[in-house]
Amino acid sequence: MALIVQKFGGTSVATTDRIKNVAKRVARWKKEGHDIIVVPSAMSGETNRLIGLAKEISATPDPRELDVIASTGEQVTIGLLSMALHEEGLKAKSYTGPQVRVLTDSTFTKARILQIDDDKIRKDLADDYVVVVAGFQGADEDGNITTLGRGGSDTSAVALAAALNADECQIYTDVDGVYTTDPRVVPEARKLDTITFEEMLEMASLGSKVLQIRSVEFAGKYKVKLRVLSSFQDEGEGTLITVEEEKQMEQPIISGIAFNRDEAKLTVLGVPDRPGIAYQILGPIADANIDVDMIIQNLGHDGSTDFSFTVTRGDYNKALKILNESAGKLNARGVVGDNKMCKVSAVGVGMRSHPGVASKMFGVLAAEGINIQMISTSEIKISVVIEEKYLELAVRVLHKTFGLDQAD
Ligand code: ADP
Ligand code: ASP
Ligand code: MG
Image 1 (cartoon, rainbow, N blue to C red):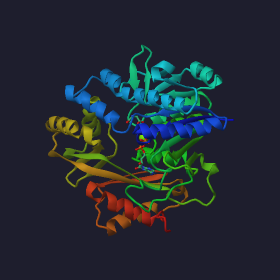
Image 2 (cartoon, rainbow, N blue to C red):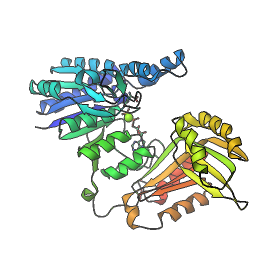
Image 3 (cartoon, helix red, strand yellow):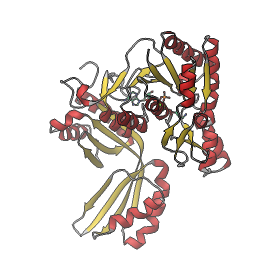
Image 4 (cartoon, rainbow, N blue to C red):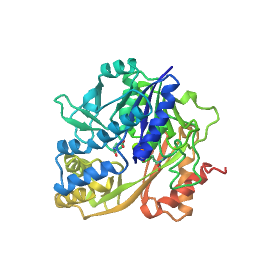
């Protein structure tokens, strides 16, 4: 007998029929004698709808109130799923995040989990209940409702698994595991039996949203056994996220290609090349709470530099306005930008021991006539920023070049 946390994503609970199917799957595990905690997301599209309603009232909704609204999607699915479990003849009880007491900090819309009370859940499990806990939400010290950032139910599930010392955390979704790249973009993508935490963390933070980044961080930190599986198939082992040593000896250099469309690039042209310029440009951007990703600075022959960086598209207009305001003070020649950029990355722990990956990557992109505008590397990844119109082409050729296509 094991203690298992099962998380079901939005598409898996999109209709009442699908919720009934989820209940049937949970019932099978329960009847095998396992203790089960289920964490559903909101029905697919529901969180977007709720945020949309808030934006109809206010262009810049108050974050506290936004969380009050956005968290309700999961309150619906926990109730429905508990009822569906009753119909399967099981004892089941639902809790919202605040009811469990998933304690978070007060960063509304992207709160961090600080602690989880396990008393009620443990008592219910001992009384043979399936415990259904709302994903994506918690409450801060003062009882304010908080949400954990988009895709946050993954993190709720992993945090519960860590708090209760579960034997496994299963993330059920609409694909049957983690693939070498998004199978919706490259049909030749291959399902991975295992992927290391480190690689999964890079993939997630570089745009593969099959798992929320924080859930992977949490699982790595608390040694939670984490598996991604399909909620639409009965068979299959899915993908197990592992520590590096557990991977097979003979591993590919590149494990996957990640991409992110949500990229915009801004350039301050011809600023004087002197100490403090980066601070002067990025200081006001940071003060406006805008996250900067890649940064590049090119020295021209006249002693001036072009300073470029990327932000998410949602922050593009705000960042452009700030730069235009500071351009005069900086003595810059001008500000230009493009919000139709994307980032494509090759990820693999094998890169550590194999030089030449970057040049191979740049070579194939050049052969396709794709201009690389920015580059960033770490020990296990290489990312390039390119125009969005080349995204599919770049992902496909890189996937093939690094031997990831199914046929290879
Ligand atoms: P859920 O609603 O179940 O949380 P998500 O939409 O958040 O599901 O995540 C699943 C989706 O992630 C898949 O439908 C797939 O399009 C996308 N995805 C992106 N990259 C990958 C990848 N490398 N492997 C598998 N799926 C991926
Ligand atoms: N319902 C939330 C969202 O759409 C959380 C989740 O699905 O994980 O972002
Ligand atoms: Mg998700």
